[in-house]
Image (cartoon, rainbow, N blue to C red; front, top):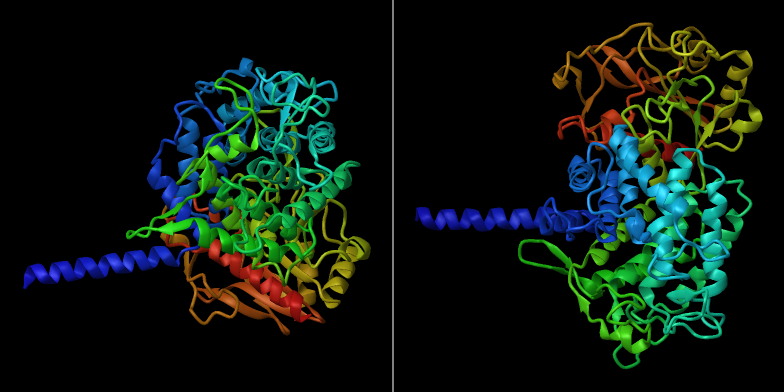
Length: 634
């Protein structure tokens, strides 16, 4: 009897475990597969793009969940290669291969989050390669040094997003001219006028055996090649300056490519073939990695506003097809992706001639890195896409006029704006909060000028955080009557104002309170909820299940904050020990949210510091959902 009970309990536990796993989104389930298959060691003994594409997928899941296990995995994977001096084990700059650049995106992320000098040195090493990389006369990068005068579509993803991230972070603005050149030149040379698709490779010299002697192009429209190019393009556009003269050219290329990709989507399955324009021909097969890449490009393009909304249906059909055609789940709940074309290329030894027979002879495999990584990327974008309707196209505008601290970067030596900024990935930043706004369709922008009726007009949300005091900024600017008039009128007309103050001694109160009293709220000049070291329970605040704003967060962490006094129509949202710590108010058509701490900054939302039972990331999502409700009901 005892043995039977044990077996029964084991079956029940196994069933519950499987149910819990299958309840998770596909992105998290594939992430679990990746970290189970490869533990701490990704499938290569050398620095390669195979690692990079898996890590990009895991990074997208980390940003969606704030689960530190994904971040920690990425860091462990990179630390297997990056030395304390910034050297990269097995990397050889003199090989001049664009494939070696992709994993630099993970290093860029680690540098921005951790401010570690070794990651800075490593990304600078990769950037130096691009400065010296051989090029065709028109300026395009050779794919590799040993592939003389050749550009491949793969290279546009391998190098350009890293190049753009580096340019944005380190303000190398002229680099965007060069980045645009890569995409514009490749489309000019490789686009097939009949289909609108791009050929895999272009030999500028027209001497390579696989190259057409008239055009220099390879012979076949291979799916994953177009997928690499498509993903590279949408990722580069994230970093591209809004006023750059070539931005519109890149958007036009993306729209042309999206139209062509849609044309060659298989009508029955929703996915795409290994050779895109040869559906049904002998040997051709439905291929998963290219299908994931196209879904990623289309979904992200729609969410970011790069593509028209009509492509959401195309992305959804493609994603549904991927799940049906390629995703399998075993008895333990682990998922696998099949139908992934292995590694292919052009030239080399043995020689790869780029023919239809060559691409279709490369048979599909299961859980190859390029399928695992791109499925995570496609899944996170589809998970985000379903949330964008209410907030789509709206702007969340972050003040950087009243909060305008600068510091000298101890690595680069440059003066940088810091403390609660969208672009800040370290503990002080709002990058996770910005990601949540973006997931819900809002664009995040920063206001560096004094708020007035004109520059507030474009915003649905305006966020004031931690106004400066002289000890933080000798040029501190205060909220004066013209600002109060502009902001309150904007709220009255339907704007949503978020005020994330700080405790006394760390923020300005007098002028801020002149604004807040318009809404029946006043910040007390105090500091409560002090925490000693990492005794997190001292800063724990429980939230009742029936809270009107925080629908999913049940326990949060908040320390050293100012409390609130309320009058008029302002309402307490959260109290702690008889103190009001969060409040809202209606004002005309608009709404105000107030809390006495910046609170939603990365240190307490990105999952790396707080114990797992704290729901600060959920609270940030709850806040954004509340904001969207205010926007849609105004």
